[in-house]
Amino acid sequence: MKTKLRIACLSFTLVLSGIGHAQQRHADTASVNDYNKRANRLRDTHPDSTAFYAQKAATLATSLHYDLGLAEATVNQANAAIIKGDYPAALSYLSKSKSVYSKLLENAADDVKVKNGLARTYATSGIVYTQQSNYFMALESYQKALKLYEETADKTSISKALNNIGIVYKSQSNYPKALQYLKQAAKLQTAIGEPNAAMTLTNIGVIAFESGKPDEALQYYDRAERAFAQNPNPIGLALLRNYQGDYYRKQQNFTKAETYYRKSFDGYEQLQNKFGASLALYNLGKLYAEQHKYAEAMPLATQSLQYASAIGALDQAYHSEKLVSELYGFLGNTAESFRHYKNYIVARDSIFNQQNNKKFAQAEMDFEYRKKEALLSESGKRFRLFAILGSLTAILLVLLLLVIHNRRQVKRRLTLQKEVAEYEQKALHLQMNPHFVFNCLGAISSFIVQNGTDSALKYLSKFSKLMRLTLEYSKGSLIPIDKEIESLQNYLELEQLRFHNKFEFKIASSPKVEFNMGLPPLLIQPFVENAILHGIVPKEGNGRIDVAFDVENGQLICSVTDDGIGLSESMLLKENSVTAHKSMALEITKKRLEIMESTTSKTAQIDISPVANKNGTRVTLRLPVQYIP
Image (cartoon, rainbow, N blue to C red; front, side, top):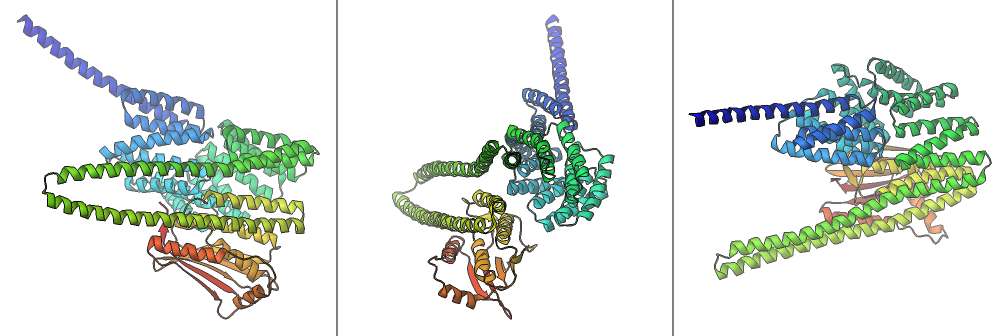
């Protein structure tokens, strides 16, 4: 009897212990959720507190094996790192969060909370890529976030994703697409009473300002300011103050411009956001420099440089070094001016080299990975074949081995042909790059002789931006069309400057052209260059160049049209010319199109013809539609 009583007591104790353990775990996971809520709530006002609570949540969630809490905590840690400008740390946290959310989604495909969490991770990644000027990756991240939010019908988050996509297109100066997404966001925000409407109004105002409509921009800025008063957002308000400073600076109202720039700086300082603070200080320094207050501008530019250097923001450091160099020059300190000018050149080269080194390292890792994968694949196939065919007769074994061997040979031959074509395409692209650079450097040399040092520095600044874009995509087989448009925009602005606005230009992209379509880099630029040099320059009076991108019958249509002297007269001038220079652009382009045809098994054509009923030439490229993965 005593034994039975002892067993009953023991069983009761175990049950109570199990209940107590379950209750304790529930309390602990609730603590994780509470830490995450605090971290998220304090994100915009107290980034240090956000980092503190996010770390506590991550530590506790790890000990509990509470994956959902851990994934949310790492996103909060990423947000704290973004505000402080530590982008490598932010991307590291986000990579961990994506991994955890993806595993959770595999086991719970319809879980709304998990989908929204993964979408938030993609959206936060988009913020980092945007601030790093990696617009292709930013668009890809925001589109993934938008798709997940649409699946969960989260209207608030959908409006934010639409707004962010609009911001990326705005950063690329693709204003039609930017307005398309921003207006969708504004319409949805108005319908649901979304607090972030202020940010959307700010961005629409920026587009109006950059499109040469300052009065319209000011109206949107005023509406945004009223919206921020109703729904406070410190980082958004700091950004708005910066844009308001830009507006008044454009209006030559330096007093108001300074007031708004300083408000922007104070806001970023309170948030410990060194990226924004560096930008505000740079704008203040430029404002004083424009008023010839070089002594007052110097400490602002120096502090901007210190902040940019501290967070590794190379692009901002590049601009700040240049401003500091110019200020020392104005103040008569030649040695310091030269030292900072050298730093400016180093920063510029670091941007280029960083991109190149990253691409070289990635290419090397991809090669090694493919080689190992191929070896493992071959070994695995042989093992499976011997295991399956071991029970068959000798005749069937021989026949099957012959068939498999033949198929492997065909596949290997096709693979090798494709790889040879890809490497040949890259080799031709490398031929084009020096041709392009030599032409640009020749133009810069001519410009220095004609226009003097100050104008040449302006030209060099534009050229460096163009070269940065060229190097960024120089190793890939395809470049996003938005990046190609940005590159052509820079190149045409350079040539406008060189030839004293002898021509106007317009670059248009049809709505049929999707954001992830691509084309080989430096394919269009040589024809734009020919249109300028052989069509517009010999012409009396000013001219016009139109570049257009469209999709017709499953082909990407790229056209370059000028109203210059015309094809026949241009060829006559070339025949009478005594120069020994021989253009390689057309020959290389035709070869690249042949390779494109062989790799895609689709037609790639080029047509050069006079413009009907008037002087001028039109070059039309008909390319296979290709998408960048």
